Length: 172
Image (cartoon, one colour):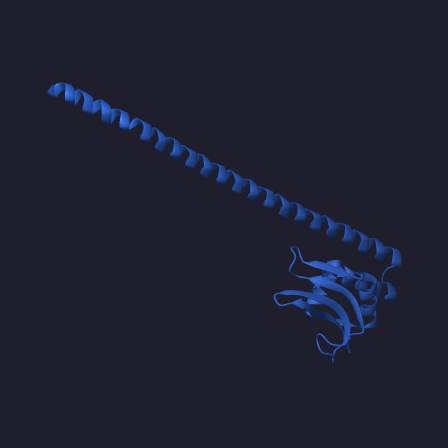
């Protein structure tokens, strides 16, 4: 049985994975038939680079994806493409209909991804603005405290001298 699965590489706590087609009996990081992509979960969002046509070919030949790879293939639309192609083979729909359905799905998916990226960038900008405002408030509070302390320091000795002067004049 042929599987499409991940093979780990990279150093400790900085894992990267190769998406490989391998015999199910082969070890995880051992011999494989073909490397069809890479997966880097440590980036935000996770980076998935796949040769879509090769993954589709292997799926059509009967290769079974692992759970993680199945999620990645679904995210990229390769499983939908397989589903539509099986429908074409069975005669349920034409190749043009399948291609248009896939194109519509891809367009909607790209819109969702772009919307999410925009939302993330806006939230980052809002957080940066909030941090800057908080820092300026703290800076203003510190400046006000320093100003009050300086006023108190300059105002305090003057009344002390004035109080002692009339007291001396009263005695004399």
